[in-house]
Image (cartoon, rainbow, N blue to C red; front, side, top):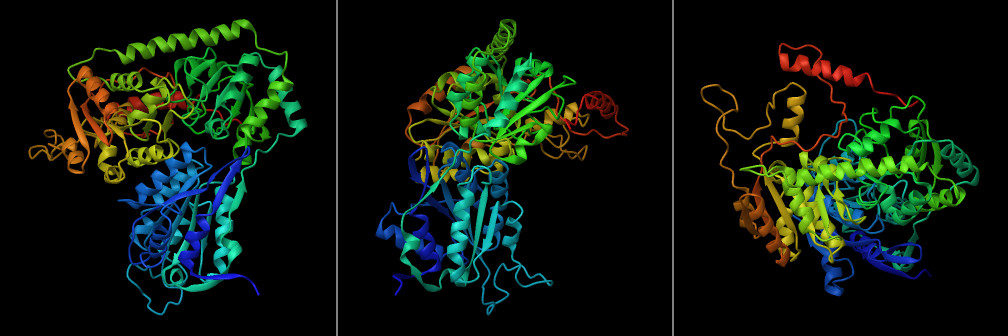
Length: 626
């Protein structure tokens, strides 16, 4: 007779997750390190009860963390997974209805950024006896549809457990995708609320320790040979390092490859930190928010070696960055989708393994000394630009670049800066002097406003030995700041830098360049005389808001006060917020690059007509890279 254990579906799910491990290079760690949750009628008596039972038995079995916003807890889990190089993540449980659909944005962010997150939303009754239940979406074309189906297109794996017997298959399928470097993203197992509470006799082997091996796919020998031939034929090769370099822990392999070959390295948003900013072959950021050093070398590159990058429009400057008419691409990626881009030579392999193979096969070959010197000289010129931007002496309100400079100077080499949306990510990409592969944490795949504080929470949970600096503008803060309460509750130290510029600074600047005159981007009263939102500045006090949530707050007036406040925050033991006003009209140094945002083809506004002319001129430089 089979050895079984009688548990509810929810209890079995929790117990299963507590015994899943990932392993790479012989190192094991918990795959699901804990569970965020907000409870409602769709999960309180199911997953909620199961988590309570597990906590009472052993608080370390599957630790529960109380969240304040369902989107926020998914963001925190994504950040946690990113800091753990996708080898460990957190689960998120929410009730059916608004709780579940609040997770859609977080799921999209996780999937777009290729980050593993497990979602466990409650669902409608499988028996349908009580239908329509509270918050149930009634679809005339079929009774098997619920609001959770909105999670299908943003999940890499989706299943709904209508019967207890289906649970093992769903759980194993979910773990497979979570641990697949090429396929990972948001994984959703929808759990009907009646099924969650239903008991079943489970085979005990379902709850034994299971280790999921995270593979390092090797490059094919003939593909390496062809890649080497292509690289050897280049006179102006360029490496574009993406997030895959960091996730595969290939930064040392990248450094050795660059030093042996002399090929300079440009970095994407996700790849920033793959090579230290002061390395002689580091060109810094590339693309629309890149450095002039990287973009000038990119414009002349005849062979581009993309490692772990998905070539987003910001990386390629909307396909205007690489201007050599005969440019060719070698794409190293675990995901065939990305390896095939720009008609590149596909090296479908783990980044570390591929770089080591290429280094060995290229032994004795190097670019010309003059090319190395050119890269070093351009990087030095940009670093001097950064230094000036850090110390502009602008006043009375400082420039955003000065705030970034102070944070960079005060933070330690292993500390982490977290950001996501607005003007700050672009400025950080250009200006932040990254010293550690995990020290730069900017979410720019989805560029989701509201990610910053929740993401900082997850990042700090993943690396408690590092200080985490969350840089957030007033626009993003207003989108989602609730997870500050979770940081207070859990005694988690976050240093939040709240930049107040009374509006949407990034879109304001973009709007102006596109001829739309910063329309709808200032936070202003409606003017009774004009009928427009061009009155006085709104009297919003976000520092007071943070203080009301239990966070210790300091207000800084100017650069030196900001520096002093930041140093105090560094000494403080809990969540700390430093509020500083900046001048949003002072732009960061130009990247000498472009981003494709269409401008109205016809307009009665002269500003729009002039912007259209500039747009068409830049548009003419776009290439398809077929």
